[in-house]
Length: 137
Ligand code: CO
Image (cartoon, protein in one colour):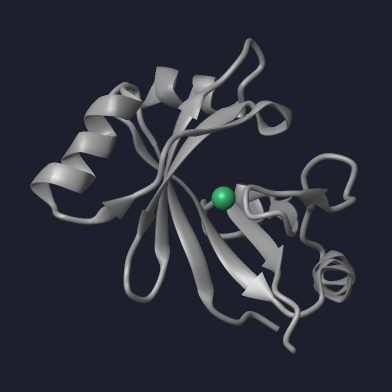
């Protein structure tokens, strides 16, 4: 069911400083910041040869990243994202096995324009997991 690692997301308290760290100090390619109001985050994508890192910074009042940064003021790994070929089939199988899907259980369009879902960290080794549908052509 799981396919590639799509990205690792890191919550950061200072997006400019984090972008400069990855771009200037570590020498990675980084995107311009993208605001995603429906997800409550501003994102910078760090492109690596085999995957991506997403630097997440809170946007708006009810950002899901705000509470995380209050508990982890220096920032930290927020979630990891795996690709699945069929997100509804993956969801139904995981729910049948007792895992909890966050929110209303329906996929939302994520940062890459593809459907995503999040799984409850308590059901997944303490890790918030995002599933993103990658249609295989
Ligand atoms: Co993500």
